[in-house]
Length: 173
Image 1: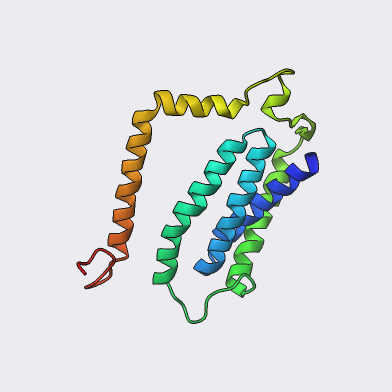
Image 2: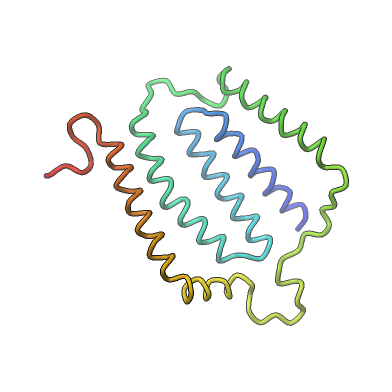
């Protein structure tokens, strides 16, 4: 389990480097998919499979739709790839900063204490994240409605930004 969690963490950091190195939107979308998948794997490894599923569905289902709008607006005839000089320079710089941070701050860390939250209690009948879901729907109903309204407002803002000069997504047909 230790090695799988290390693979998930390294994949998460490398995916973040791909997103931060500012390549073409197409390769940025690939980096976002990798980051989302690796983050969900980390959550599953720590005992939160429902939260991991919700993150994966909402993040990839919602945020990549917005990213598709921006990628459609930034259609480049010759997009920057991960192997071009400018992007490669950024990748090497970010990886260097990450390795320097690991070298400075990793003395004294012990990775053998990674375990899921359900492994603490010997005879657990209910998973830890399922109790949180029940509380979210019982006491957090107002916040869920507010969050849905904010997401609807965000959708209209993105559609208005993507509208262009004269015609756009919110035009009368």
